Length: 292
Image 1: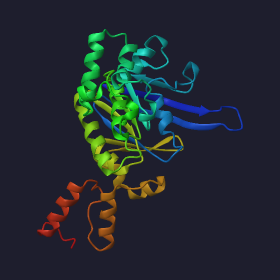
Image 2: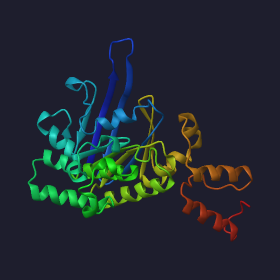
Image 3: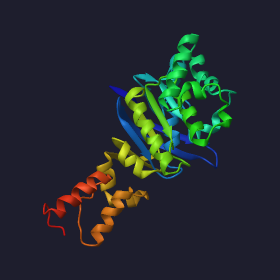
Image 4: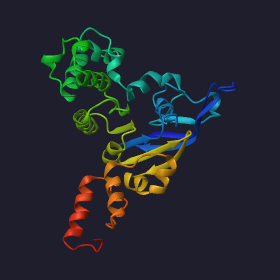
């Protein structure tokens, strides 16, 4: 089933002014339900503008002349379904912990479900479930002030506030920004858990090529508002010439592969995970290859 369908989408900021900028240029894209997509590209490539079209924060220009965006078959320009659309597509912005505002954790998480006009019992159920999902025990955190929590706990509360609306699609804008390696591991585990239990379709905007290569089923690279690469991590990161042309880094494991090649150990350029690298090196060590 198609979760997202985009046809000929163009978006221009400050149109017909001296500061006019084409943010998206004729984007055509389909995201199937259940996919994990990582959108990558330099700052200003159009990533954030693209994902803000998914829940109607930005809409195609009038009369369909600049494209069409559909979420589960419904156009984002339809006023009647806009509120439901924003429940169906959960958006977690960069540094979401800065968007907390209520005096208790429970009230902050309940804000979205209340706007859905759910009854109190259902709201309470979702608050409790969301806190448990992000690894914060309800009895310990529900009545605490979000402003007294650690940075990592605040981020988890902010994510819980989005997943409490039980979206079908979860969009994460730079979910690893500002995190230390342990924080990255924790949020990675949380994202995988959410995909399994709450949101089958996840889209992340990221500059972290290591996370993109290991988490995502599909990598979409943007440059100057255009899609310049779309494929599996192996396909996209395996094309070193394309990655260099786009100006992106390759994952850490791919850099190891390139360094080994400089020393005469030629491995498959499509290796992107440490498990694949370990397996290939063991194969060569035990005589399964003639690269050494």
